[in-house]
Length: 365
Ligand SMILES: *[C@@H]1O[C@H](CO)[C@@H](O)[C@H](O)[C@H]1NC(C)=O
Ligand SMILES: *[C@@H]1O[C@H](CO)[C@@H](O)[C@H](O)[C@H]1NC(C)=O
Image 1 (tube, rainbow, N blue to C red):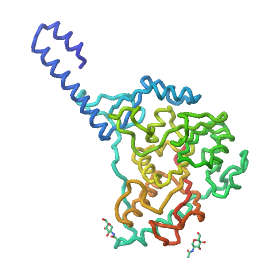
Image 2 (cartoon, rainbow, N blue to C red; image 1 turned 90 degrees about the vertical axis):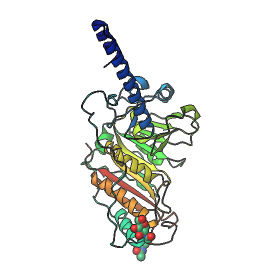
Image 3 (cartoon, rainbow, N blue to C red; image 1 turned 30 degrees about the horizontal axis):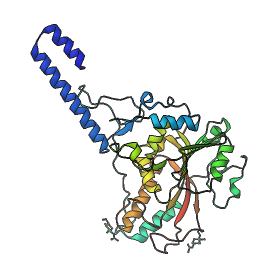
Image 4 (spheres, rainbow, N blue to C red; image 1 turned 30 degrees about the vertical axis):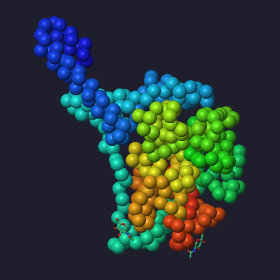
């Protein structure tokens, strides 16, 4: 359908009609591409796909070896917006080119809400269901944390727990030095977990918008990136240099860095965790993650979570059930008694405002 082929045909046949048809078709094609671009800007069914060649990043699967490399790659990066359902799929034709529509996953817009906890919705029923859920491990893990690693994380008061049972992949990844941890945080200086994982040979990427430099490497395995993880990408119509913060979805960062999977995702995001988790579920990014270690916050609904209190709690519960449907199992839960004991601005239900939860992806190979 390219213009030159049309022109060649036209020349051969010498018919003005064909030329006009070709021009019309080319114009339609341009229009279609533009519409595709608009739609992807609106977030419809599209995600920005940075192709390897355009991004100037190392090929998929290869690791980013140094801070400089990553930062210059970031500067050179040009984003092409193509509509594609699957991550890392080559740029598919956008619209109305071939007869058959391109195959793609159905994109989910929202998570499936669980039924109310009781026939008449009430906050206490929703709260008790959620609190029971987050206090009950679903699978037992016999070896948690790093007894055989350089630093003993058990000695920390508020542990971040990962599961090192033989039947899960993490311990093998650590032994073969193939493990990768992403840590999302907001300026907390408690980096013991990250340092310990890096000491054990994991490649650790800590994303923290509060650091001074764009990328900092500390030691052999620990990187800091001045990037904030969000549940949406910035509007591509705003030039990158006008954005004050560098905010991206986790899936976009995986693409940019050429990483296919993360063995452990740690998140301590002061209530942004709910929408981030939703984004990971809706875009299937969770399937690229082996274990999740999240601090969750329940003292207020969280960013961009709306509805009355029972609705909010039902939404939280439904998010966690989505993880269960994807074969994630809770193996550790920790109620933080050092934080205010608040649940949706109330001192009620014997709840804390803050819990640390760890899941293992039982499908993870
Ligand atoms: C909260 O909102 C839901 C849905 O809009 C409604 O069904 C429910 O009765 C409301 N609950 C309370 C306690 O107002
Ligand atoms: C309240 O929570 C604490 C700490 O988790 C627990 O020890 C205690 O038994 C709970 N109290 C009730 C009444 O459930």
